[in-house]
Length: 204
Image (tube, rainbow, N blue to C red):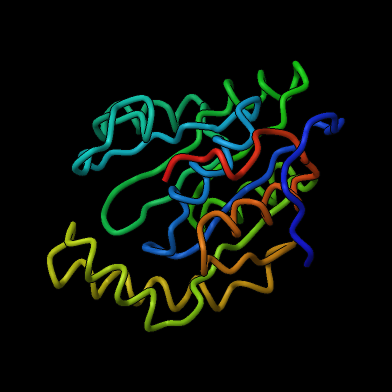
């Protein structure tokens, strides 16, 4: 795929795009780069029962809640999707997402593969994109370097990652994260957007 630089003047039909991929593939970094180029984009903030990691800010990276609150929201049907991953629950509150689409904002959702399948069932018009590493060795190295999990949890994430990568055929498109900026620009293209700022001014 030819990657176009974002430029002004595009008209984008609002649509939900789901970005998924294994833990450690760099989903958050790519999404942050997309938002820098495309500040008008609405990015859904997921809810989780896990504790914040270093540098994460509540209501920006995740809405952090306890299991009792999460369970009540499930009962009230307040999630577009939810899933248990590595011992914690993650879910997408549906109301903010639908509100953004209703006023014409393209919307991006970063979730795990289990959740992406639920979105496919609930909103078949959504675009599902799998973010993959350039190689298995790169993914293994990223998880090791991150240092946020103990060895047992890291091994669990690697087992889950293999199963998630096997599900690539369920997605509408695949983006290789061999470079965060390049991957972000490719994702913007897939979403139909050519809006945003000029890449050379991006602070690194």
